[in-house]
Image 1 (cartoon, one colour):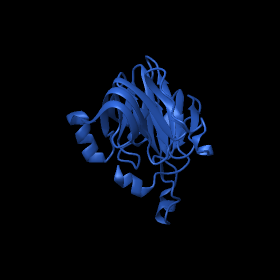
Image 2 (image 1 turned 60 degrees about the vertical axis):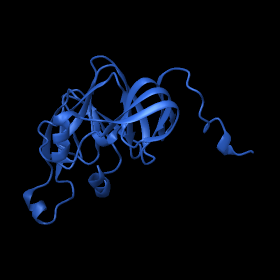
Image 3 (image 1 turned 45 degrees about the horizontal axis):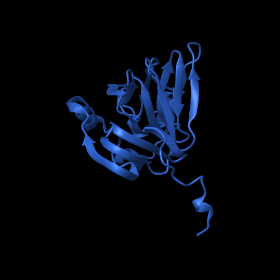
Image 4 (image 1 turned 180 degrees about the vertical axis):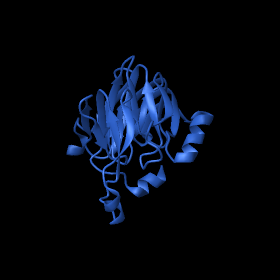
Length: 225
């Protein structure tokens, strides 16, 4: 049988080492030898001897998710084998975290990560009850983190001289040392006349970067999380 479908670009190859690699722009392959964590329901295929179990967020995490609708619903994947992960054909990216790195990420943008990484669901300081959620997932430690993004993300440097303002529905994540607060960019008169659609943004200040997606969160997806 002959077809471009069977080219090396599309063919899954046996893993040469444990851990996470990009299968292609839309999926991540993980060679499991022990345990890793992934977004619930994100496994699209696997081979080998693997088990998939729901992973709790702890009492604090569950309460935060119940209040805000935000969170990080996870499963633990254990055993020996290979698994592929994806979510709604979103673009996939791998972040290599080193000791001392801390990254704040919206839970809806997390696909999978090494079990050695630490994560907490924390309050976004100064953000209040915004469309992007009051809580985000904060990752630290050493290991790999697989992220997803609808479309091609934009990484914007943040400097002490120039803060960056981002739509709370478009933000993917930011370096955790940045300070956050809400910024109102339209007058009361404009709001009374119907508004510009850009009433409030998340302001990030300090030294670091922010990752944004090239579209705002669709309401039907927001309600599904």
